[in-house]
Length: 262
Image 1: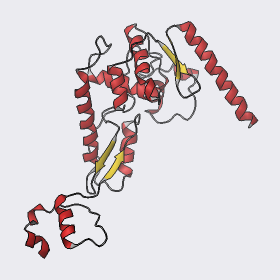
Image 2 (image 1 turned 135 degrees about the horizontal axis):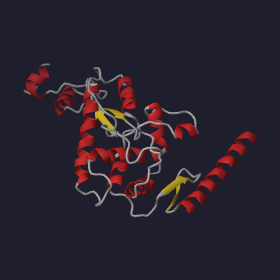
Image 3 (image 1 turned 120 degrees about the vertical axis):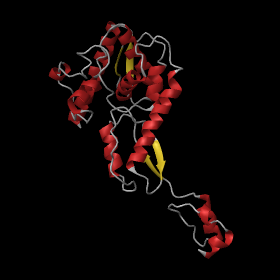
Image 4 (image 1 turned 60 degrees about the horizontal axis):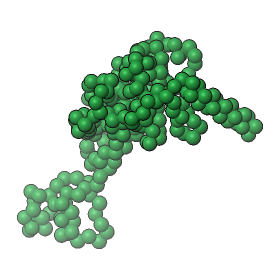
């Protein structure tokens, strides 16, 4: 382009995909190319997705290029929104997600609470993934984390339904309630059967869940159950927990009756 040579900016022009304003002059277009503000696209991974689910979404993105060649284990990706340019590869976006996870853990680890019942970032990610799958209420995360931390400290089993589902489906939706036989299923992820943490995360936890397990709420809670509002009722002892469970079962029955009437 003669105008580019005239301004002596050939080496400053940056490759990319640009949106050219209507009626832009040649000089305005040159300035745009030199600034390098090419079109950004965005990929969002929701908290609580498994690595397989995120990779499927990455593969379905038609702007990204290349095959996924990285070997990524469960819990290694930080769910977030990532900007990219046309021509970026799927591996590049996944690598950013892995690096973001590493950087977040590095930033938070030294500020973790004392006397936590785990000693490594890998164990923290396992617990954070369980917290992520147990609640969609942001304000509850540190309290849910506290329940699991308190149970681990007391040698109690975690008894988390999402861990059972992961052992059965590798995190794909079960599509129904758990059966009593599945509560007793012999898998490394069944925290109704095993003591301590399962061997790997059961999903990719978001930053809030990671922060929650590293600095859980200060509470003596040991139990929680759904309360019918989307959140949970908490209890420090079995008697109160059983009362909360009874209240939840009553809500379930009422909803089932309303569904039949409707």
